[in-house]
Picture (cartoon, rainbow, N blue to C red):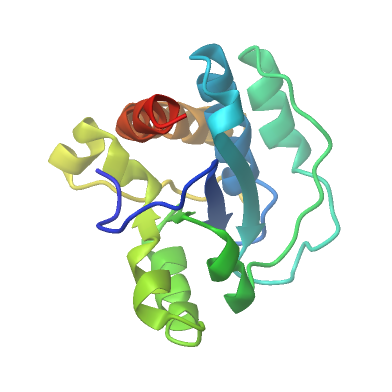
Length: 181
């Protein structure tokens, strides 16, 4: 389910947010971009990612995340990690957190935005788009950073399932935009 707000005309602008923008959020960016391109919706969306903090700003994606994506057939472009800033709300329709800690931090930042209510309405959790995760009450994508290959593979599987649901949720928006052309 999309956040309860009207999405801007033109491409839908989505930012995925995790802790340092080197594992989960860039993985979600790659996965959703691939899924939407496969469905013919690449021109309908602008996707990026960021972290809640500056720890890895300027760095590439974690090599283990890149390997997990590559092993599963994804084309992984160059990545430069960055921190999500309060100003980013103004240029994003959806700001999608990877876990509850990110959701809380984004909520704090939303209160500082030019339009706090609109900023807050743009925020959701990625796994809230996965009905299986919702039913299980497991909405966080655990951080694989301190773990190994199995945890990166598990995070990718959770992100893929949630991005499938997000793509399904976005399809009516894209259909409406095309009909309006």
